[in-house]
Length: 268
Image (cartoon, rainbow, N blue to C red; front, top):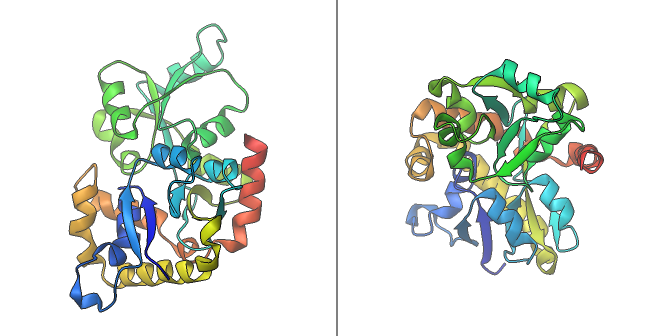
């Protein structure tokens, strides 16, 4: 297989999952790297998919559905939470539900991209109720709420584990709500291959599984690199993030894919 462009996010679960192939000059690996990695925010990856920029890319599940004319989803590499995922937080939980009832003064909510799973899960929770949704970079959401520039936001990645340090309320765990309503894992992100590279699909899936096995067998080796890319550096936060979203489904999510995609289509 030729070397393929592979775009992922800098979040801990992605760096952990693909650490093995990222170490291009690691002679101990004993084999050349099949991927050339790029690191972008998930919303930037979703936008790039519309142009078919990367041969292999991580996408939000809703973004995959918008780009399935260009990409095919893989059964390996997905980030699926088990009753956990993005969380809706804010200055005051009670105020959120009061504003939700007031159509003239709906809650203003920051989200990490309009094409993201986080926003899809928020809309699934709102169930048609009015809200003002504004997209910002995921790294800015907690800080903007702390500065008083917003009252509520949906946080992802490590942010879901540290918002309490900023004295913010949990309004609801959107991942927990999704699983409660659907009995399905939370569809955070998937890996897709561009259709002109479909001949390599099975090989890419096996290369991803090889990297995952290495990461789980050598977790201490991965953590310094994970920390280099992370927003929050505390080791316990990094490990919580990794083990929440890298699991058996990362090796093979084929058994739940059709049901997940059906619910996302319904929720759009």
